[in-house]
Length: 364
Image (cartoon, rainbow, N blue to C red):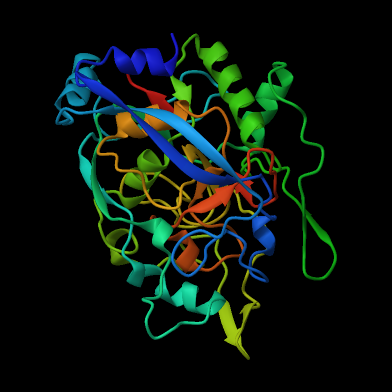
């Protein structure tokens, strides 16, 4: 059964209407995020997105017109005897998962939250409030699909299990160029897998579903990812704690002559998923920094008018191809890019030493 079919069988989707959403979507041409400290290329202009080589795209989306809540999702977990924050692994080489609560949260950010990094890339005009419009509007989202999420980013070792099982391509080059011209080789089994694109991530998920005899694993939507990263928090950073290099693999950026320059303490390489005090309130690690994490959601110039995680999932499956949303910042970007509301745009064919992913599992 497909996720879309499974979704439609949930009783909280009662009545629906079809709307046509048209948006500009660029061809996949996002640069390696590791180079974005030199040039910001996540397609933001003064008020939203800067579209390059854009094409007109129209997608049909299913929007529930009933009021949704999380009660059914909670009932599903209770019927299976699963408790919030319970950890499990379905096989020895499967990712460790943690069951998430099913509640609601405020998604997105006001312009003021991104005003500082906006001002680093664009001239601030008197009649324009600085900030990235594509992080808004702030809106309430109900978590009505019960899920567990990977405690960690998918690791090199977990990817190799898929390679050995014939489900994934071998990633031969996991080198990360260092400032001195040498390379850091990210081939420890607990490093996050890097150098994979969106389609290759889906190959891993197909293998994982086959290995577990389910159709339950997938990429998170950006709503599910942001909900998990916030972990009950509606502040700029979870629990109002700005990430540091002790709690996240991020860069410290100095501003020298108007240019962004990484400080000498910047690592310039990924770290093991077990390194640093990188656990949030829900037990999820490295939701800030290390690698930019792929989601299944398409990148639009504003958040879609969706009110539940089931609607976000329907939106992500209604579109065959698009640039996807990346979340969480990355190893040589500052804490401002590791905010839960930050949205990067990643082409489906783009692979990078700064991009990885984690998975979610439907609880049913």
